[in-house]
Image (cartoon, rainbow, N blue to C red; front, side, top):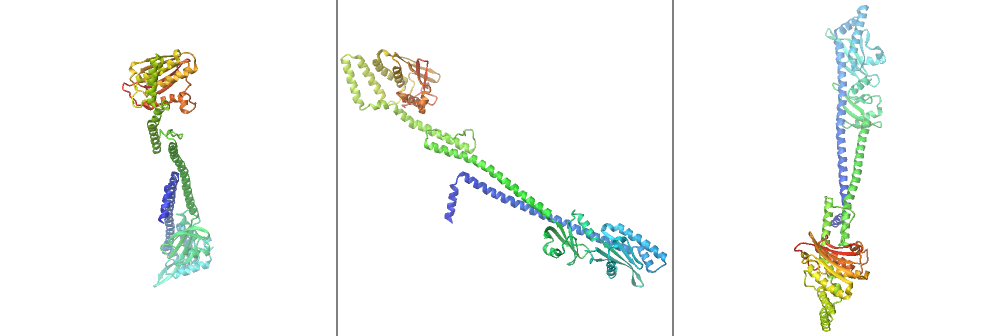
Length: 594
């Protein structure tokens, strides 16, 4: 277990930066999706709970409305049986008075019963019948005639057995409606005498529909009424086979159940002031579809958001990892060749973020390393390269010096002044060339080396070589790298003599201008190729003769004083080529042997 854990950690640690960032983003996305889905489900569950409570409350209110209307009907029957005019007319009918009085009593009862019907018909009363000794007085004969007389007689019989109290007959709710019977009695010689019986027919479907529509505007609301546990009324659209199972499906006071392949929100409770219970069903399919659509849309929004986040994250990851890839390329390129500044084709100098700081710091470090290499390594090589030609022929310097002295003594002995002068100049030139002890050289000393060299060349070429110099006295003690001017003079003579048979004029000029010192070596009858130093440095031309020496001088001056100084080759005109040395002109400028 521990080994597999270490292996997993090692694999994660050694993964690429892009892989690590992707893993982090995927973890965050997973957590965000989980949190979002959980939050949505919690909100929807809370919404469902509040919706259920609101619906349950509304349907409970509808049951209260039913109870109120039933109470109003009972109150109406109480008013009917206690109405003095009604009682007086019933007594008249019961005592079998003359026909005219009976007829008047019946007419009066018709009017009174019709008034009660008009007053209370909003309680979903279908009709009011008042049964008495002479027959029955009806408020709405057309509706009353639709109900069999036997039903009315059963209601009357049940009411007469209830001692004047209202009695609800529920046996015919699913066929003819709900009936209320109430006996109208008087006390006669300590006995109760029945004057008449009020029968009220109630339109049960209309009662349920009007009560539910007052809170829920839905024609599909279903009702089931029970007396204790016996069902006595159900809405017409309900399947009789399902009625007995609905109560079992509803485990709590309210909830969602399936009825006839449809979903309903069901509420159960009791009708106030009665022994009745009810179950009210409201179609839940539309609500469920809306909730499911809301869930689906929420998931779609989450998925779209995640997809957009992943796409944007991928773009950002690429932008970050590409910067690090460039940095790695720089490091590898610098590791292969530290002398060349690494270039990835992107400029980070204007970037101020962490990646930009890394790139800029690495570039700064690489530049410092290159400068150190140039100063401590290349500079030493170039310094030694300037003496290689002289050292190639050095087998035994003391032997050469002694030999030159012997030649000089012999030349003087036989009167050969030219030979003596040449030998002395050659000895001086060799000593300066091979000198490694002195570290400080000045313009004055360099000109002495040039003088010794030109002495030899003038004896060699005689009248074909002319030499002049114009040097400002203020620069004679300015320091400069060893063997800087003499190689330029040598190069000028070689090229001038090679290109022409005419007289070669060599002129050395030295001036100061501000903080700069200019030393020009001018010769005639030769021309410099354009951008010769750059082409030599980049290998675009093959050096011959003293080409390497020119590049050597230029680099040593730059390494000694900086990139703004060095050697400048140009053509003064069609006849004259100029090699210009540019060095700093401060009063105390010093240098070391390079």
